[in-house]
Image (tube, rainbow, N blue to C red; front, side, top):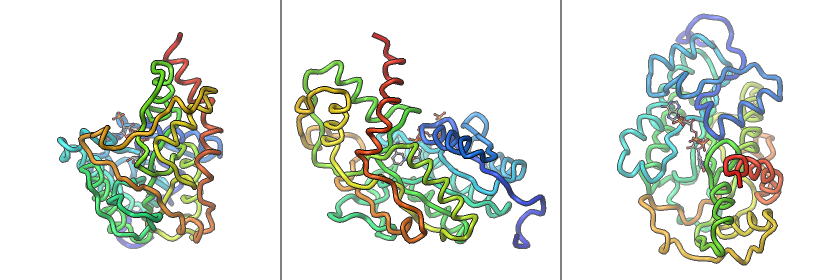
Length: 307
Ligand SMILES: NC(=O)c1ccc[n+]([C@@H]2O[C@H](COP(=O)([O-])OP(=O)(O)OC[C@H]3O[C@@H](n4cnc5c(N)ncnc54)[C@H](OP(=O)(O)O)[C@@H]3O)[C@@H](O)[C@H]2O)c1
């Protein structure tokens, strides 16, 4: 502990912010399964925009590792409400980093592929230049910078993308719903990325946290996405296959046919060199993960949409 840190008992255990979100729920489940002592704080328990509350929470719980799963994730809404998004995605992580600097905690902060321009043709390295094209991407980049600047030795930024799981609305659940209502479905085939199961990412975050505590994983930027790559069209075909229906009901279209308020990156494939260098195996191929994740996501859909 350096002299600027607050004097108190040694940090121990894990603290998860944004614990009610899709990723937060999976991180909690994985930590519970691993028998880790964990404090779960959802938005009602800790609003990250409240700097004093963040500082008090860290001082009170004294975790060894903080996993920040809280975020403004409404990508299109951020275009017209950037200041509100920035308060959560930029200021929130800054408050957390400041509090971690005081207590000595490691901070694992989750970020996004949207910090990149999306015009590359080979996977983005962790140190590739950032150039967000959307308000959401700008706010997330502000959060990354705050964490890395305030915690050069204990700040970890884990960029993920195309996240799906059981604990919230996401592309897989949307496509399961649409399959039941439409004969054919037009899906964009000109945006490439890596569908990533939130439970897989949760496991990776825990490994990274352990690596941080053990001193084997250096602080900095990591990419937490599945291996392999596909398009939204290819992703949807795989979802249809797992539903046991004809993937040819999915038809390729272009981004021009689906204009959204926030521009989407055309190429969101991220490289995983830093995990490999830290001795942590990068996430498995997206198809294998989706195959394992699918039954539980399907069950959630059926429960919420009884026939
Ligand atoms: N989903 C994706 O495809 C995707 C892709 C790339 C990166 N990511 C990143 O992955 C992380 C997890 O995303 P997710 O999909 O799990 O998102 P999510 O389900 O929307 O969860 C985000 C959580 O943050 C909470 N939150 C919002 N504002 C807060 C505040 N001021 N203080 C405390 N908590 C607050 C939300 O609470 P309320 O629901 O009550 O608002 C929600 O529970 C985020 O950093 C996101 O940027 C996600």
